[in-house]
Image 1 (tube, rainbow, N blue to C red):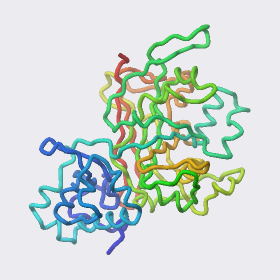
Image 2 (image 1 turned 120 degrees about the vertical axis):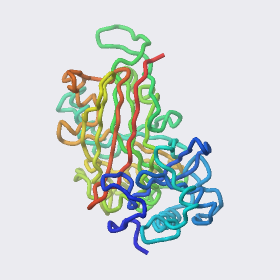
Image 3 (image 1 turned 135 degrees about the vertical axis):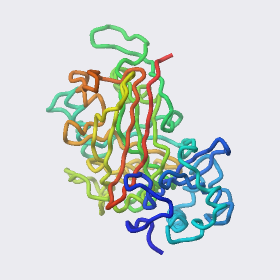
Image 4 (image 1 turned 90 degrees about the vertical axis):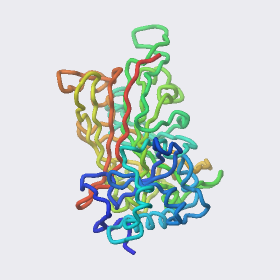
Amino acid sequence: MPHPNDPSLRSFIDVDPASDFPIQNLPYGVFSTAANPTPRVGVAIGNYVLDLWALEQDCRLDVGPLGVFSGPSLNPFMALGPRVWSKTRARISELLRHDHPELRDNEDLRSSALVPMGDARMHLPFAVSGYTDFYSSKEHATNVGVMFRGKDNALQPNWLHMPIGYNGRASTVVVSGTQVKRPRGQLKPPNVEVPNFAPCKRLDFELEMGVVVGQPSPMGGMLSESQAEEMIFGFVLLNDWSARDIQQWEYVPLGPFLAKAFATSISPWVVTREALEPFRLKGPEQEPTPLDYLKQAKPQNYDLELDVSLRAAGANAPASISRTNFKYMYWSSVQQLMHHASSGCAMNVGDLLGSGTISGPEKNQRGSLLEISWNGTEPVELPGGVKRSFLEDGDRLVMRGWCQGNGYRVGFGEVEGMILPAE
């Protein structure tokens, strides 16, 4: 049977070459419809969602206990492990192939199992057990360091030796399309003596990728490179909304807290690690050489294009404000997971690891408004003469990501959010 990543594969469902969801992708999500409001697991194929619970009930998918795809999260499926993930993806690919009649020629099954994308309501794809956000783009860390500490002290001494991160809030991870209320918090501009409590005035986005952990690790253990890699089920687009003025006052001495806890948006589709395999490449040279427990024997970065567009409140159309690539990340997702577990920290099915803001070496590749506007000193110009240093109420931000193959792309759809006024 052909491998699901085979670029020559075609589905009996017509898929535009510019679609994020060809047969080579097959990302997982959770959806419902007006006709059947019960959330269940599906796979994206072109402009359709393939209902895996319908296939499971029809005995076309055998993944273990009946009903693994009937619930509102991917966690039960992820818990079955990498061999089942790979076997299931191969079977779904087979069912969707243009030369395989089993689903193609079964009109009743097609009508129940293939749901037009426009009829599907997407939900949070997995139950988030824990959320950790890293700080692993050298370009981003350098830009922020230059702004706040000067060029000679941009990177802190520990940054080149380990992936820096903090534990965030799983409770406010939300699916794309969820509107985000402007957070409130303590603000203390440099020219005042005492803080006040008020809505954030410097609201920002952070362009990230999220790693979805699909297997647990024991408390007290460590992870090898191969073990960490096998634990990764897939990736999502991630926007870690940030209140820069709240963060500036609160982050000393313990780092981000409420300025990052009010909302983190992720895309509804989880693209599997296996689907990204053809786009794997070596990341930036790491100097000094990482300690032994962080060394990588194989390439662990991905050639994954990323785009951010902003539609200002009242504007008719969005404008692209950033275009970068996941390949620039200094610390890979595998290294982040290895480091996370290295102290003996247990990892759970459904843990989410944010990559940290993804910025490239060029000005148009910066992954946050803090960098794009250089802390408000160089506002970004949008169509119609509108300018933005930070996000305003009514602004709508959309992130997209994809890997470009030969005649097809493996994409993530989008993660979108609109800013509402503070209450």
